Image 1 (spheres, one colour):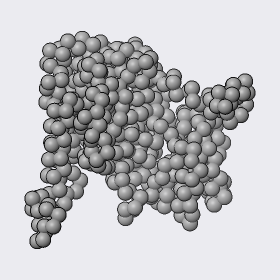
Image 2 (cartoon, helix red, strand yellow):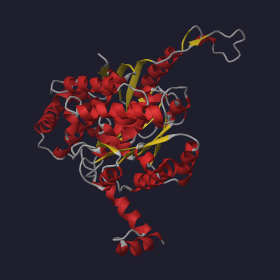
Image 3 (cartoon, one colour):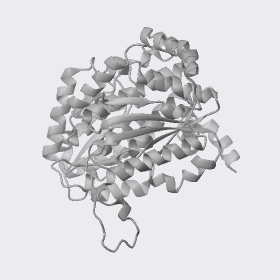
Image 4 (cartoon, helix red, strand yellow):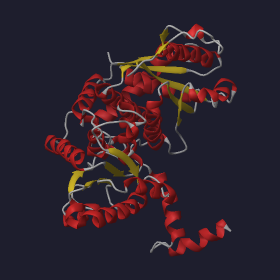
Length: 443
């Protein structure tokens, strides 16, 4: 099996009878999700998405990816939150964190519109100088501040460089199927468009055109990615004690014991952006109504040299979920050094993956002995099929866990608060009354 959950390192923290006791809550969450009658039920398109997706659009995504590969040195992906995290995480995991620096026959890919940093924007613009550029702008409305501002800049860059007729062949918009500023502009200008489904929220959208187009441009096999998700859809369809539901149950048991922080851990730097995707998925889904497990992430052994002390001896409020990639994409044989000045010859004549595995084993023993429960998700190897399963595993677990927690896992009402303040302080029309009051608070 490509993905399995191990609960061995919950011993001493969670007893078997606690899984039995929480089983009715898991069943209730499953039934709510299956019946589509719970909070947020209009955003459940992701559940059947791996098998029930638009095949015609999927073919167009692959064709557009080939067109971008043939005509662009650089693809600029414009989006924020779920409109970029999944794609970036998948590309770094499947290809490399150094994807843009590697020799390859696919375009470099840069992600913009996910911040409001002038320095970041200028540096990406400088990278584009003298290169052929394509743009994939991703926004349901077309008016979200960060991506809309970035698209204004890159739209002008393309029109100045290629003219409006040339630019329209290089701009691909992923947006609402029928309405919104970006959809209207795309229809007017003749951009090829792909759909952000009405019933799939941004943080669940990586297996839609939102994520699939950039992932395909990077040369990843999106057919295999969807196959992995299809396997997971079938594997986690029933309330039968499957690993996905057991993970959701374990999280809730630990939360009720005061473990309010979950740290997603991996021992491969290529997994780092998957941690960022996971943080949005669970943070935006569960963090509401004064409840929720705070999602954090770390890459070991790197972060053991910065966070290890806190995890081992700090506030007793966290548990860890370790994604253990059993077979690395590449390995490295450690040769013996005749002088052995660093004293590391005891590591010689074996692969570096063995050393990394022993670091994992030693750390999990230390942390559990220090009072930190650990869950382990074993993944055979990193490829598109396994990643598709892993994505769906986390999405389904998030939905079940959220319903068990008693929240709507599919809305994000708190996100609007900062936007209203920012718009008022910037003088956006319609926010005049709030501006003076906010400025007074700022002093």
